[in-house]
Length: 384
Image 1 (cartoon, rainbow, N blue to C red):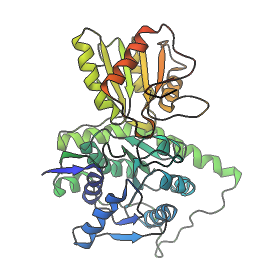
Image 2: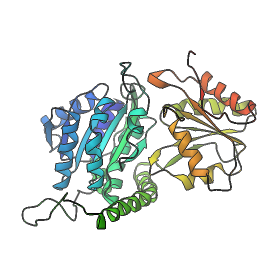
Image 3: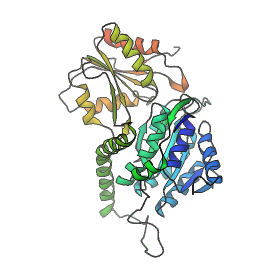
Image 4: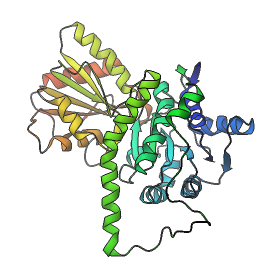
C-alpha cells in the first residue's frame, strides 16, 4: 500500500508494523509527531500496545528498559537534548542486552537554541553500546524500524534509527507500507530466553565484581561485531520480500571511480546528483554512503576504497578539538591496512545549514585540486 508520509509518520507505521507492545512517549520537537500518531493508532485499537506517557526522556528509556526486561517489544523516539537526558540509561539498556529500538531525529545541540539538523546528538552516544543506523529517505526510515527489531533481537543489543530533522522528519514522500501479514512472517513475536518472570525467577542488574565484569563487556563487543554480518543478512532477507535491500554501506557508482565522496543521511541523496553531473563531464567519481555507524563496517569500507586516488568525507557534525566524526572513523578503519589513499575531511551543514549540490561540487573540486589533505578539517559554507 502506497502512502505519502512525513518521516515522523514513517517511523510510526514502522513501529506499528513491528507490533511493538510498549511505547514510552515524551514530546520534543522535531520528534513529537511520531508518538502523537502512535497514540492515535493505539487509541483506535489498531495496535495492541501499552502507551505510557512519561515526564521526561530519561523516564521514557527507563520504561522501555523495564518493558524489554519483562519480554515486551519496546519502542520510543526522541531528539537532541532529549537524547542527551537519556544518556545514563542508554548505557543500562545496552549493557543489560535489551533489544529496544529507538528513533532519533537528528537535531543540533543547544545553545544557541535550535531545532534544525546536525548529527552531534546521536554521535554523542556512539560509545553507549547501541547500534546506530543513519537513513537517507522516508522509505528507508520505515523499513529500518522493522529491520532494526529483527537485528536487535538476534544479537540482544538496542538499536537507534537516525534521520535528519525536517529534511526527513517533516517532509512528505511516497512510501510503500508493507502488508502486515508479510511483516509478521519476517518479524515473529519477541520471545526472549530470559526475562523478568515471577514463575521463573532470575536476578538482574546485581553488583558485578571485577572477576566477571570484563567478560560481560567482551561478550557485548563480540555480539556487536557479529551484528555487522547480521545487519547485512537481515537487510537481504527483507529485500527478498519487499524488493528493497539494505546493507551497512550504500555505494553509488563507486566500482570504477577514481575519487569517492563519503556521506551519511540525506546529504547522500544530494551527492548522488553531483556524482551524475560530474560523471557527465568526465570525472570518475562515486558516493559511498555509510549507513551503519555502530558497528562500524571497517572491512567493507576497505574493500570499497581499494585503488582509489582520493577520498572526501563530508561530516554534518564536529568533534571539537579534533575533526568530523565520520572522518575520524574512516581514517582509523584504514590505519593498519595497505591503503594509503589521501583522505580529505569537510565539515558543513551544522544547525541545519543547507548543503547544496553547488557546495558539494565545490568540496569535490577542492579535494581534487589539493595535493595533500589539510591537517584539520576544511569548513564549508561557514562565515569566517
